[in-house]
Length: 365
Image (tube, rainbow, N blue to C red; front, side, top):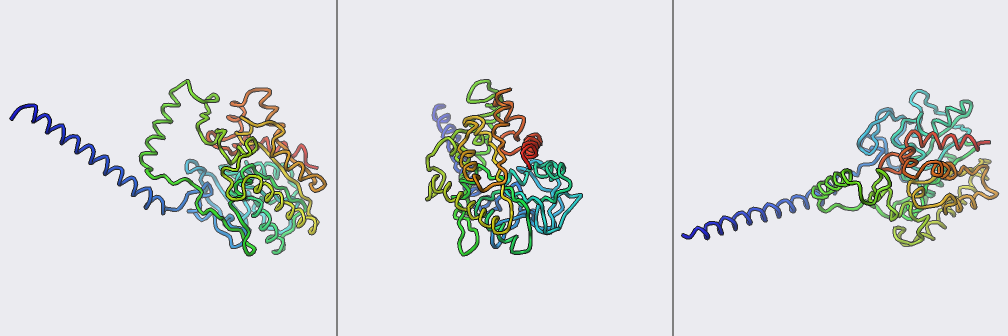
């Protein structure tokens, strides 16, 4: 038999083995993505698997009451987390179970203070500076105006009383509100799973790792210092924050961006009516995401919408945009983002929480 035939047969056998192995890998990866991982519980920063995040029959979800343990941040770090008997995030060393509060804070993950124990969140820092005030943190990740409204109504019906309600309305609330609906007196999520399905998670994981290594070793490419603008958090295309500079309807469901804004403002009008009826002072706070620092202006659409809403309605309008943009003018965008936010994440770190608390106390009457 000619030697060339032998080599040809060996090459064919090797090619068959390689092709078969690749097909088998793809099938296993596909099966993993659409069965095991697809049906597994969706992890959140509140670590629902530990029993901290729970569903609620009226306002969709909340924190478990009387929780005392650890919570994880982005599945990488842990911190101490405590709640009182109503599920309000609390100081583990000074749990307050009263129903009468001077100030109640409402908001989403930024106001909850993900990644930080209560005393290092901006609500906790404000409470430390106002020791004579009874302060409640009603905020929970992924809240939006529909939930703010029904949670307030529900708590008041159960005998809770607040002298002032401060809603730190997040930029992402506008998109979240496009997914929420109040049906028969309770909040429902019209999109059960908004996360992108990964068809081939193992391959995606590998490619992500290679991309991370390549970008960290490269001095070129779309970066702001060490910040990778390909990262969704810093991307100009991130619809959760980019709506303040781009008025397209992409990412805002059937009602579109304008409808989401109008719906959010309408729900805040309802909250104002409830506050007025119950003699509660209403205040609103706003702050930028990294995307606003990178691409927006100090007079952001977020600022304009809620400042206008507050006219003749709010006791205070807590606006932290000027402070962040003052910092940019005295240094640069990269340093401001690195100083006040978690790396690769839009949430405030300890320094960011300190900034918000200082701004609040500067304005607080």
